[in-house]
Length: 462
Image (cartoon, rainbow, N blue to C red; front, side, top):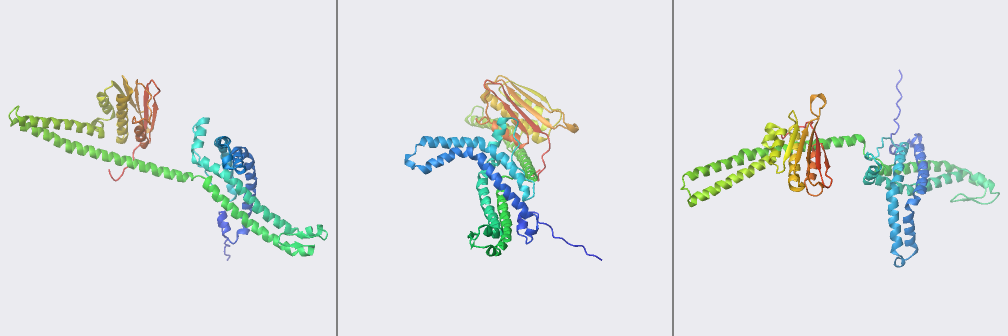
């Protein structure tokens, strides 16, 4: 009977290999040495390519070192600084972006992937690409990495070069002594005069090579930490999980808000409004027992009029929180009611043959209500058109609700000018929809909203 031979698993990372006593028996020392050697050449290439970019700032630094502060002219210094800043903004990303891609590929020498970049996908067009790249943090982290790479490469070159040179000198000590023909040869901390004296020091060469392998591994691990911090973005699976959590929490918040709004509307409609109606009726009955035209009759009449006005205001408030017609008769009827109440002549074209989820109908209703309010207050329009349609979806159920509000007003609407458009954009975004605004100076203005008709996950509140 034979027993299976158990083999120790190979370390999966350079750090695990460094902490293992079998480090020198694995492939990691040579992978780390290869990575460190590559770092020297890549750093040299970056220094040569990036030298013109930082040349203005280098000249400014030289001026500041050569001359006292009080004798310097601010014009050349300011021009050099601004010129250097322009060079960095224009050319540094062009160097850092390909360098970052190359460095992420080189990480396979010392660790396991994947290595996502963290960059966003830009929109089509050169300007859109430049705007995206200059406004995202991943680009500036790569620029910082390109600046750090040069001193890191110099350090690696100094350490590895010194150890390799020392190992070579000790290993070839007898030959050097023989070539000196009786002269003295310095081996660093000792001076020899013959080949026989150099032989014992040859034993130090393997020790130095072992130190070289450990030193390159430590340098590579340090380099890896810098690269992970500046070049590698979060894994896509992690981003998907975070996005899924954000989407679910957003849906729960929307559902909770809808529940609270309906509760407030119900309490006002069935509670305060009914009590005010009863109060108005009681005041009307009380007037029957009073002498018509008397002081008491006038006071009760005034109180009844105030109660009726308060009922009207409360009814408008309840309709603003959640219109009863939207719940009872659906979105087309609610849009017709909005059009009737708008002071600007409004035409409604609603092609919504089925009832949509409540959160979709509610969002569409309030988008149209806010848009019509903006038209009445700011646009100076003479006609408004409201369109609502449901394009054919898959599986027989609607996928998207499209709502458009167009007017012939003066145009020039901007989301940041306090017109309520920012609130509309946020409300639509919370529902996972999109909003497009077209409002050139002179008009017309058109707002187009697309809302997905998918369900919102239920919450314990409902």
